[in-house]
Length: 465
Image (cartoon, rainbow, N blue to C red):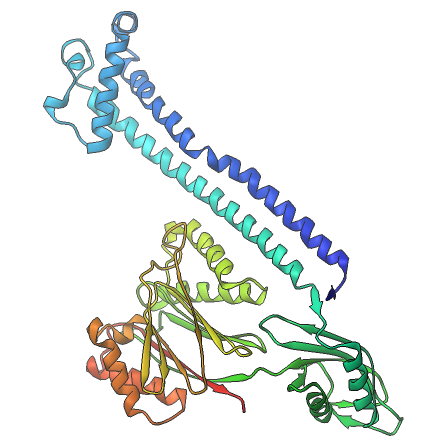
């Protein structure tokens, strides 16, 4: 059964906050929903705008309104449609009304072009405003969703029975360690936690925290470590200590890079991001082009993603929110690929998320699997599309990520075999050595004159014995 993690009040607060954000999203959504109707209404005003400009000083305007209003309106609509669709008009397209009846017939094409130009500018500004509102609606909805998910984390699941708790405390007492207020929590997919108030039994006694970890691990049946805030020893002064289950997997990482020829800065940005003790994410972003501008694009995407993951957002929500921010800055043309390989060190699974990036490869012995996607870079369109895949990892697996400058020199149908040959020749278990061999093989294909920025990330997975 679950019990409150940090109290009912915080859970109620998140519920109310989520409802508020959802209501704001509903209000803004009502403005966005009228977009098509508004555009149609504004288009109907085009004809009136042409008439106002064309007939302002015409001596026949009153007579036209009384006698030829319907014929004039029909002819004007035909000409407007032709010019908006085709972008131009031909002499034989001119309606008969403007040839025989209208005194301003020769000026009508120029006036329509002026009105259409002004209308395109208005529509462009209007569309940008509506896209901003759509992005805001999405952000409000995602924030509401995040707050609802956050409420669920305020529940801690007891995984020890009362009898097991008493046995655990008794086992510690035999080593002169007093424990009280034992609390446990099982975080789904992120291991188990144990919160204890501990002190040594006796004023002259002390015990290292490492020994306490070993005693608890033996009693619980799985390895635990004290959190980094704990002191390195126990004394007669009571302290609160949080112990976390140790992940069953660890990782080794390596990176090799090369800047495009004649450039000083790489447009590729990468990170080995440890969100907490149980997860590690390899992130690679390739800014469009090369040099400082591409570096700014990829670094901005990387920084936003890390901050949102640190705040507790899942990758999907973080990606959509980042994309909406970049899409609003479309006039700056901030586009970048985004490649994420997120490893759960408890379950040994890896989530692959790809947005416009080069293929990722999973090596298991001499077997090689390609994980690729055909999607646009982030920030290019209002609604980002990405590919998501989950793979189970095993001891000795390697994940190889790279920017497109590494394998662009190899024909697409030959890339897997190209990498397989490099990996087959490599006997070292060091990811850094493997990353270097891949980069050197690619540079050799280019006569060591890199045509683009090149980055290779390698992560080796080790299952603890």
